[in-house]
Structure formats: C-alpha cells, structure tokens
Amino acid sequence: MTKQKRERSLTDNEAKAVARMLRVSPQKLNLVAQMIRGRKASAAPADHQFSSKGDVKQVLAGPTVMKIGSSRSRKGKRQHLNTQQVTDGLQIVNTYKKAGYGISGVTRDGVIIVKPSGKPDSFNLIQLDRALSEVGSKS
Amino acid sequence: MPTKSPLAVFINCPFDSRYQKFFDAIVFTVIRCGFDARCAREIDDGGGIRIDKIMNLIEACPYGIHDISRTELDTASNLPRFNMPLELGIFLGARRYGTGTQKLKQCLILDKAKFRYQKFISDISGQDIHAHGNRIESLIHEVRDFLRTSGSHISGGKKIYDEYLRFEKSKPAICGSLELSPEQLTYKDLTHVIAQWLARS
Image (cartoon, rainbow over all chains, first blue to last red; front, side):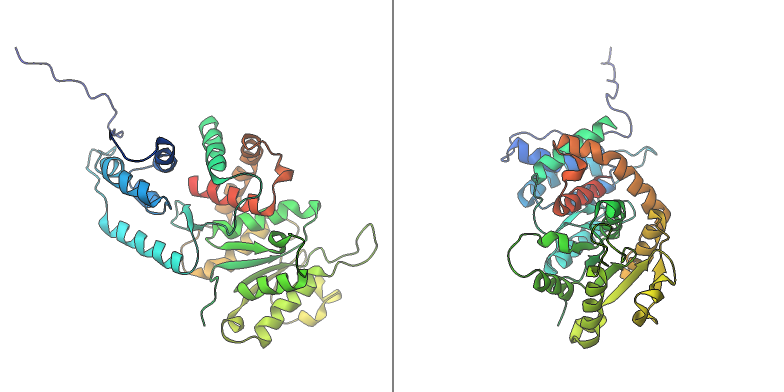
C-alpha cells in the first residue's frame, strides 16, 4: 500500500519559503519583508529592488523573492523573475541615485515615487511603516 | 550644467487653513506623478533670511506651480497678500535672466477663474493661466496635466483624484497610529506619509 499523497496546504496562488540561520536581525529583515508581503509575484521583485536596505536585499533575493517569483500563479503557469525587469530596475535606481534621489516605491502604473528630502519631524520611518501596516491591515 | 534636483517642483501657494485641502492635493499629485514636492514650508527653521532660502529653493526647482487664487485682501489686516505674486515674479525672473538650466524652467500658474488675474496682475497677460474654479478635482487635473510631460506614463486626473480621496480618508487613521492629529503634521511629515502611502498602495 503506497503512502497517500499529501494535500497541498497552500492555495495555487500562494507560496511559502523558509529561510533559517540568516545573519540579519529579525526586525530589519521584517521591514523589507513587509514591503513585498501580500504583493503580486510580478510586483514583489520590483518593489524589492527599490529598497534601500542593501544587506537585507541580498538575503531576501535568495529565499523569499526567488521562491515567490517561481511560485505557481492563478493560471497554473510558472512565473519567473524577469531578469530584464530587474536590470531595468537597477538602472533606474542608479539614475535616481546619481540625481540625488532615493526611491520610496513604485505605483501600479509604474510611476517611481521619489523619497522626500529630509527626515520627518514628528516620527521616524520605522514608526510610519508600522502605522501604515496597522491601517492597511484594518482596512 | 545639469540641475541639481531635476524632479523638484516648487509649490507657491497660500498656507492658511482654508487652503489646506488644496495644498494637500497639490503635494499629493506632485508626489503621485513621480516628482519631488518642495515649498517654503520646509525651511521654517527661523535661522537665516527667508527670501534667500526661497530664492535658493526656486533656483533648485526646474518646475513651479503657482496658485495666485488667494491674492486677496486679508480679513484681519485688510491688506493684500503679495507672497504668491512675489515668488511667481522671482520664478519668472530666474527663467528670464538666469543661465543654463534656469532658462528651461517651466511653470503652471493657477487662479480660481480664467481671466480674474487681469484685474490685479495684468502684466502676466500672455502667460497661460489655468483656472481650477476652487475645485480640488480640477486642481489635480491641472497639476497632473502639467507634470505628465516628464515622459513616464502617469494615470489620469480622475484616478489620481480617487486616490487622493482614499488617502484623505485614511489620513486620520495613519495619524492616529502615529499618535498625532492630522493638523499636527508638518510639511515634511506630510510628504513622507504621502510617499510611503503611495508606495504601498
């Protein structure tokens, strides 16, 4: 008698990646992970490319983004990281950097949101990130 | 010589509470279109000569949005408010007499009615003055249409207006999480909140 096939615990449009023993603090890693959590597989690598957390990006590039990038989409086709997209993204980041701008993210229609100059007066960016997460999860 | 801040947009408009919603809408649209919103509010540090700081800001910005719709008598002092026309004049002067990239400056001049300006600042006749009719939706359309020349694809004014309404709806909750009231947000706070909100939505 053969062993019964285990049912897939995740739906077709979900993917799960597990990474252990990462040399990075959970708090820092989570800041970047929050950027792509729940996002479409095609949008996640682009978002991730515009993150300023350089060392964490390296960590996430392996286990998380690659796994998300190769997960099965709703249509059942495999999605892969579009290397051209990534290259273009890096070029854009470099162009903005040269002009003295940081990037906050990209809108759905592809507009790059420039990071405002200076720091906020009443809070720091971690607090803002947390506040937006709270509001986003409630709405 | 390349401009130091090629995406900087100088916002010249009133800062009173009656205009606050219009101001927020301009800042939102500028950031939404992929530009860097700059205005005199960011230099409220008390040190140095204010006009010098404003001129430095104007020099750094290749784009300008000037709303002269509130060039009217102040209810308290019964005197006209000249800050907006003055800053518009400096901007136009920089374009006229400046060198290099200063000559490439572009500006959008807004008023509440199309030909109202002829009664109080007729010397700018010949400029293309846009009317927003004191409506935020029209204002967003005008600002978006002005900035769409940047080359990248920018959604239509209607969509940006809908996003602005969604942002305004969620602003009290965001401020609540930050233990602030929406009125307490400084200009820098506001730009960061808008940029992060847009990056996530």
